[in-house]
Length: 234
Image 1: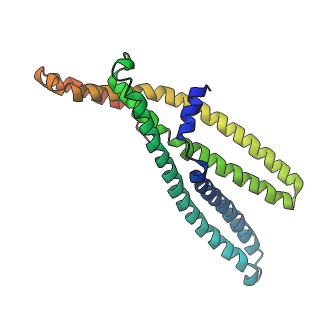
Image 2: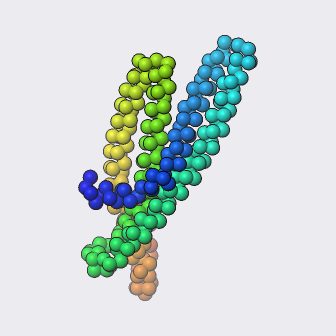
Image 3: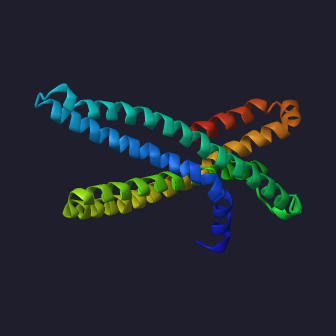
């Protein structure tokens, strides 16, 4: 990864002060989910022994507390992470426009206007996925995994080491598979979306000419064909 790419990705990341509440909220969400599963499993297993209700009260309260806290942390995570990402995205858009204005139109070369417009809009929009779908989940998962290993170590050191090894292997496999699949899909999808954008751009900019020469239906059919070949957005 060259310095230019690192600079672009770095510009998409919010400041640590602004992004820290999102990471902590994501950690709280994941930790509440793990604690909820653990408390529920213990409660079901212990209840099968039919003890007195007083021995299950703490677990019942814990299940309710973890279920509520998971929802609260999830809401806070969504609120703080999107606020930070969208705030940073606004700055990226402004910086991009300032860099493009001196280049237009001669500095853009032979780039198709529709494809260029699609690339600018889509690429800038995609930058928000870096903090939201990459950094935040990985950070929350790493903190939760570390907390789980530390908690397990208080119970059994061998079990903690086994858990740590399994988490490391799972992380490496998931990152490798996700990176390969995502890169392959993006390479195949990006050109198709550029064709759609270029067809729409040609229709809008040449609408009067196409109407005068009776080629409007052909232009619309080109858009429909390109749109049918392009996969839908998530």
